[in-house]
Image 1 (cartoon, rainbow, N blue to C red):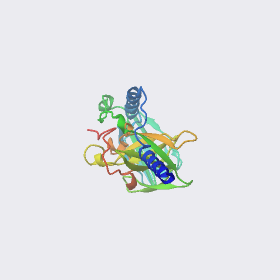
Image 2 (cartoon, helix red, strand yellow):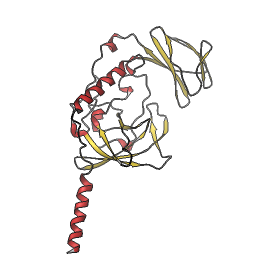
Image 3 (cartoon, rainbow, N blue to C red):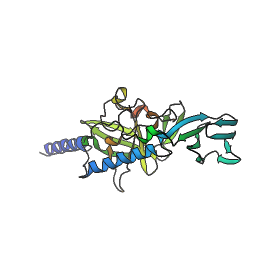
Image 4 (cartoon, rainbow, N blue to C red):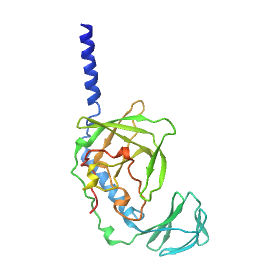
Length: 264
């Protein structure tokens, strides 16, 4: 009798463990929240220094470089403009010159000028990003498995540069009864995830998509992954950015038909 009772308990535990990562609860005003998120996303893309306003990227050699918005002098890891230090090796200023905004970016040993042009009628009229229809079944409950302090993740960008980025932990979730994982990166107050899936071949951006995920509330290891908020990296919109690519373990072997599609 005891053996039978224990067996029943074992099957019950297995059943719970197999279903505990299913669909997450959906807020009653979810569609209103998602519409607001999409509107903010478009507003940010169209901002004076938004990704859609990028008009150029120039990698700097030592010495003087002249470009459409001015002239800079690179001296080792320092960059000057009109006798003013605009990049001190880590922090860059944004300089305004007529319709242009520009700043200095650093990618490993490369320094470059990133240029925005605020006058662009095509960007002004931009109003939507192609998206899959909203599907609340892609709001998935997830378990956050914390990494040991100091754990990093090897991330490659489109220039082929490799960076070891701090990784707070791994997200575990189920889709159609199958368990998957995504390695997370430090993303400020939230976790940042770079993911790929089978839709990258035809419908979504080839270089994967990005997401932000909330950390679990204090005292729990549970959070929510909303694939309806999977969004295109800057490189999907402009050649003047240097996006990070999904780590191979974050390329899911299934299609995730949710979130943003490849821009037209």
